[in-house]
Length: 271
Image (cartoon, rainbow, N blue to C red; front, side, top):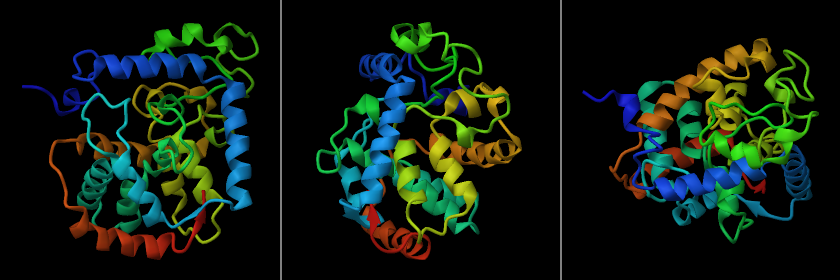
């Protein structure tokens, strides 16, 4: 009998294998330290400038337009994945409504792939993420793509610790740019967001599979990361194992999640 975990993230026998492999080879080759840092600096300035304003629910509407080309499991618009994950979170921890909300918005950063919100290429937005500025893990998806990444041959960035010190903590690491980093920046820069710290860690690191799924990069962790890992792993079961062809009716679920937005992230945010 096939194990539950074997049903998902099967990159070799996926119906979308060609599309997924093409994206990852491009992503792994182009996500350098300089690139990731420049994107983080650019979007920090953009968010702080307040030129683009949206409520969370307005941003959620853009998920109807986005299909994640890195996902080997399905080809559904991201609004469906948001509801699948949120409902799985709701079942797993019924008394922690902030956890339900994180499930609903965890991939909301993917809106920067929409032409109205930035129009970035998919390799800049989706897929598993990883630290830059230190050696890449061979356990990453399609790690062969790192051979074409200039940082792989740069002594400054290619040692296990790279530019970082042992136990420096993941909060001090520059991660490959993508939807996780973007949404994390948006929420950190919004003074009226009252989500707990566990929520921020889930949002920033839920795509960091080499860490939470393969046990890599432990040499960079501090004590806070050990605690964060517990919640990230709990969330990941809801994120991954909720994938299916079951489609939810957004009009029926929307009032509940809209109420959580009003509780934890009310008002208009800068994007």
